[in-house]
Image (cartoon, rainbow, N blue to C red; front, side, top):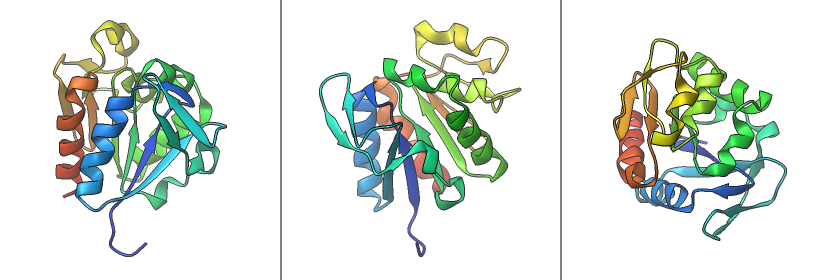
Length: 170
């Protein structure tokens, strides 16, 4: 792997938010990051708006130690991971190993359910605030950073979200 920064983008098999994925990936590509795309049970994932993304690895095979940052992309499909044991373990391990952990749109709920947002500031898609109740300190910002955890509230925040991740990887 060398000194190249390695990032893992986790998307749902279908209904992930295309622009959140595209905007984030584009910024990572500009930085020269090595990007791996993970999903569950598919070799190609289907975005909410029709984009088709090649999946590099199944989430069952993810080794958190191989990445500098783990990013959960949103969209209604992300709900598949809210209580997925593998996704929750990935989030927990990322924190335990001091990795950068990021989630956008509704996917901060995954981090909340993994228990890694306790006493942390976080944001989430406005209609999904209830998913963080009792699990995080909701701030309502477009992008929130607390330690190594970055959350963002949806597609319009995707570019700022990706730039914050790049800053933190620094």
